[in-house]
Length: 499
Ligand SMILES: [Zn+2]
Ligand SMILES: [Zn+2]
Ligand SMILES: [Zn+2]
Image (tube, rainbow, N blue to C red; front, side):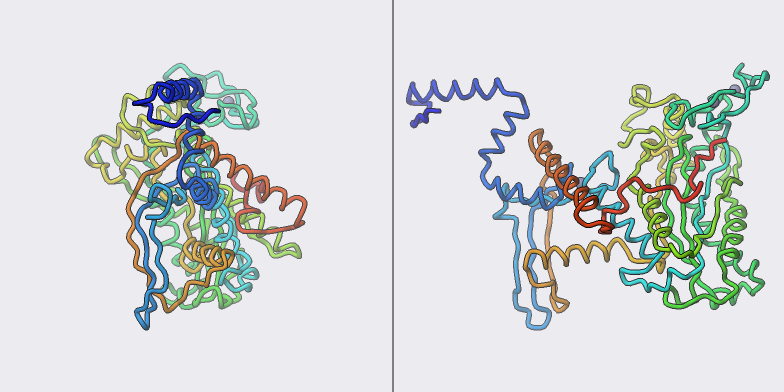
């Protein structure tokens, strides 16, 4: 390409060249044009470094500002960082979205951390004593009751001649595969209790809390010890993940563990067996009865868990580690799944008029519509049902745990940051240092070409990880790796109990 000097405003040759270049650019696709822009962007190399540091995050957040680190004792400035010298005066950081449908690289990181959180509670590590592996533990699945018959995978409800008041058969008589879109859909939408369904999801977090609050009473009862002394004898720790069933109800998979009263470092008394813990989980779950404040619109309702509880001991065999890792991977897998498992959308609903045009099943549309309708009621305002209509009413966290069950997401992040510092050849952040920082939002997301580049980086990383896992380091277990999909279901736990 000939380079024409001179301003297009006072040279005919330069003007022609400028217009020709402009025409060529306009002939390119949007992405190619954007690529040309990126190629000429000042500080492009540094921008690429930033995006690589986010792991190819699909929707990075840009921050402007800086930080200063001082020696706590002498008050001396140790180091300083400012985004002033960064491209565009800003720094890209991860979106940290845990949903794979929103950001694959960030969800993978979250999944790895979730795996560590669960795993360290099962086998120790990350500051948790290895002795926890020998503690009595159970794996439990707590499910919602039925709000109306839905089609189920395998042999569905047997055919019945009788029909409901809407003229629909009370049975199905069919056989459905796991992937059949009819699975989870009600036999009759007219008979289905959408209000009950949405209210259950909206209270799922409260139901779980009621369950864990009651655990000690049930331990006392099953062990025959006093309610007041039980906490001085034993401690129950738990971690749970929430998952959407095909019918659009949340259910919980949980690991529960008996420790001594001071926590993971102490063994529980001999009577605190996995068998007893199993009985405790059953009776505590079935005893949960949450009253929804009575209202003219929804009547009086009591919410509880369904009777289809699945509880079994995580048994200590010679292959204990493998079993535990399977359980950890199984739980971690759910943490990056959003409501897409139930076929809903992964973004909030903006207005009632949007509901009719969503690309979802009739059942999901009815659930979202019910959330919207109930969300408009003053007496249910506290449930924020419109804000979580796309989550079918559930607004809880995906993974939660009791305090001493295991390590935390926070300490895992701190560990990762320290590791990055070492890898970069920087001195570890000192304990005698204090950092003062000021950040402000300076944009988010990618342009078309930026998104392509980030996706390429993310794919490259994934390839490298898969390669390492399969060929280079047999049996390699690293942060985000083992938990990434493909985990087998521990026995039949987590079956979609749609009735
Ligand atoms: Zn991200
Ligand atoms: Zn069916
Ligand atoms: Zn009906």
